[in-house]
Image (cartoon, rainbow, N blue to C red; front, side, top):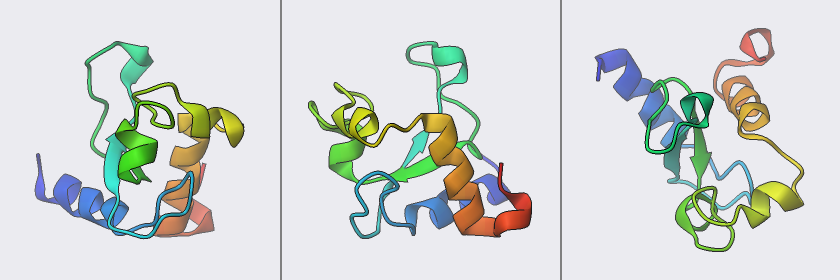
Length: 93
C-alpha cells in the first residue's frame, strides 16, 4: 500500500458510518471489483462503515445487508457520498 493510499484509508476511517451514522472511527470497506468474492477493490474505493454495518451477520454488507436494503443504497452510491464528504462537491461522482 502506498503512502497516499494509506492516508486516504485513514481519512475514510475518520468519517462516521455512511449507513447508520455511528460515530468514527469506522472500518474502511473496500468496494468489491465486479463482485468477485474474496477479491478486494482498490484502496481508494472504500467507504466508512461501523462494525455492525460492515461485518454484522444481519445488518452488515458482508452479512444479509439489511441496512443497505433499508436505506435503498448501493455501495457505489455510498462511495460517491464518501468522496464528496472527503474532497468536496467538485470531486464527487
